[in-house]
Image (cartoon, rainbow, N blue to C red; front, side, top):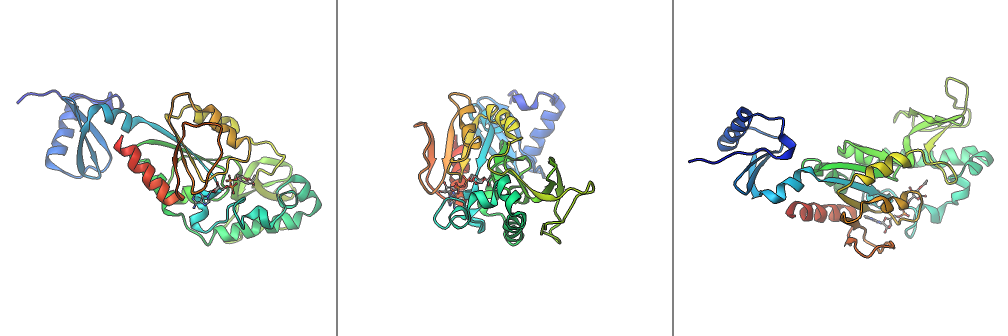
Length: 293
Ligand code: OAD
């Protein structure tokens, strides 16, 4: 029997001996957890979690190397029990943005603002990532995944996602009023901030959150990530808030865009693949779709 084992473009650093040992691994089904890819004839065999799967080579090359960029919003965490902002009974129906999420509101009544975020933080400590968060973390087995989130919770990280960029700050961090770019961790054991809590320079601490009217320092790195996407996925955001909503403009022309949301979300594009579902079900459907391509 003669056939040639090739290496795909991910594996050019592997020599022939390594390929043969991969084949041995495949044939004898020894423990081999991380996905690997052996190509011969027009077929690829990949090994994932000790299971060999044979699929057409033309598919596997994209499958293993595609970069998926996710833009998530409040709907991503809704099934964990965290309120969205603009749905019925959303946070902005019960609080005034200008009072709790602007620098002017903080100047006028700092304890009111600190209490609003103290409550959000304590709520975060009682909830868990949902299957949508876990589903995105699991996608990293098959794809190169980066998440850009407007959410200030840490549920993506707690579910195991390894690359998460927070556009609007992080609830479990504080910063001083004088230096918004130097975050400090907030201990879950002491989750509240109060007027009079200061950093080592004697400056009042505030939540490490981007308020309305403030600059969004992470937007430039986010744009670069979106530009590198082979596949762009929007989950659980009404796309009402800029510059986050404008990230869609930076997706390279022709690259597929998916949108997961149980409700209609207005975009200026008519070529978006809509998955009308909540985050958990939507991520499941997305994973099936991407893995079948
Ligand atoms: P919104 O409240 O504006 O939008 C939430 C989206 O989630 C809507 O499109 C809902 O239809 C959708 N949704 C609801 N339940 C869902 C579920 N189970 N699964 C998936 N989607 C669901 O929240 P954002 O768009 O994230 O900023 O809001 C953007 C920014 O506005 C926030 O980061 C926050 C807010 O003011 C700041 O506070 C700076």
